[in-house]
Length: 249
View 1 (cartoon, one colour):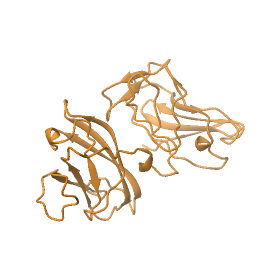
View 2 (spheres, helix red, strand yellow; view 1 turned 135 degrees about the horizontal axis):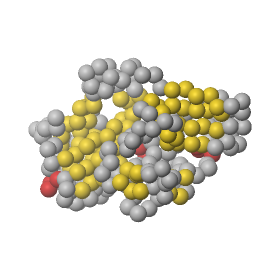
View 3 (cartoon, one colour; view 1 turned 180 degrees about the vertical axis):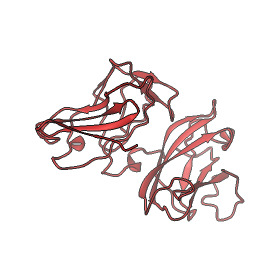
View 4 (cartoon, rainbow, N blue to C red; view 1 turned 120 degrees about the horizontal axis):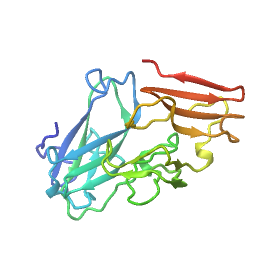
C-alpha cells in the first residue's frame, strides 16, 4: 500500500508530496531467488494510491528516490493520464535484493519541475530491445539505447493491453525487427526473450517470434518461439534440422 509520509528526511523541499513504494522479491511476493541485481520495476499508479490532481498534467514533476531518500533513480514514464487517473512508471533499481524488502520513494507536487523521464538511461547494454507499444499510429519504438525500432508493422494497435498499450495479431499481421548488430546472437550464444501474450484461441504450433538464418545469428538455420496449445516451445535449427524444446509443465 502507498501511504503519505511525514516530512522527515525530505529529499527536496520543492516537492510537496511523497509516498513509499515497497519492492519485495522475497518468497511471499516476487519469489526471486538470490540477488536479483539490476532490475526494472513497474510502478502502477491509480486513483486508489496516487493524487493525480496534485501532480503536473504530464507527470513531469515525478521523481523516484532510492531507499536512502537522497539518491535519484533513473525512470521513464510509459503512460501518465491525469484525466483517467492512470500512470505506468518503469524504475531502474541498481541493486534489487531478494533477501529483504526495499523501499523507494515517489515524489511529486512541484509546479516548477521539468521532466527527467529517460528510458534509455534505465536499461543497460545487455538489454537490446524493449517495446512498450505506446506509440499511437506509429511503429513500435525501442526504449533502449540501441534504438531497435520496428522496421514495419501490420499488427493492430490495442490500447488496453496487460500493462498499457499492446498489439494484436489475427494470423496475418506481422511486426518486422531490424537486422542490427545489437540483436545478433553468435553461434553458441544465449539471449533472453519475454513477452505478455494472451491467445484468442489455443492452437497447435503457433509461432509468435521467428528469426531466419543470418550471418552472426544461428549459422545455417533459424529460431522460432511459440505456443503449442498452452505450452510454450523453442525450436532451433543449427543446420541439421530443427531441435525443439517445450517448457516443463
